[in-house]
Image (cartoon, rainbow, N blue to C red):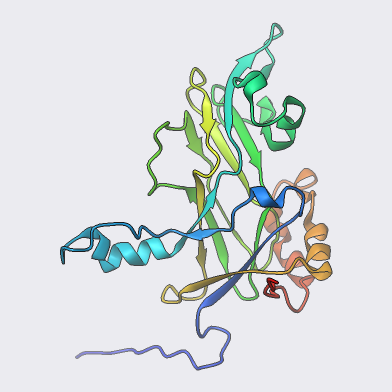
Length: 257
C-alpha cells in the first residue's frame, strides 16, 4: 500500500508565498556605518563543471537561507587584569585606533566576571542596532559566519541565539566567549560578522527580507520589552504577554527617495 500526501498552500493565506521579515536600525545615529543585511551568496565561483559545488542545489538552497551582517568597526582588543586582578579590555591600537578611546565602551563591553559561563573564558559583547520583525510565526537564529574564511581566526567562539521575532523585538548584539586570552580579538570593518536564519511555519518557504519603517507603534512595542532582562531570569516567559501588546501591523516597507 502506498500513501501520497500533497500539501498545497491556498493562495492568499497567511502561510502562502515567501516568509516576509522586516529589518530596521533602532537608531539613526551613525546609521551610515551599518550595511544592510545581505543574502549569503557566492556568485564569483566556478560553474563550468556540472558537478561543481557552485551548482549543487543543496549548497545553493542552504546558502540562500542565510543573511549576513558585516562588521561596522575596526577593532584590535586585548584582555588583561589590573594590579587588583580586575578584568579589563585593552585597546591595542592605542592612538591609532579608528574608535576614540572614550567611545570604545559604547561599542564593546566586557561582561561582568560573575556572569561568565566559565571562569577562564571572558565574555565580550559588541552592541549593534539591527532589529528584525515578522507578522507571522517566525524564529530568528543567530550564528557564526561559518562559510566565510577568517584570515585572523577569532580567539574564541561566538554565542548563537534563537527567539521568535513575531513575539519579541530587541536589537541583536554580537558576543564572544574568549577561549585564548593571550591572543587579541581582531575585527575588520566590512568583514562578515555573523549570519541570521529565519524559520516560519514551513521549511519550503523562501524568505523575503525588507527594510521597514521605524514607526511610532513599532518603537512603543520595543520599549515595552526594553531592559526587562534586568528584572527577570527567563524572558521567554514574557513572550505571550509581549505578543498580546503587538501592534496590528509591524512591517511597513521603507520608501527610498
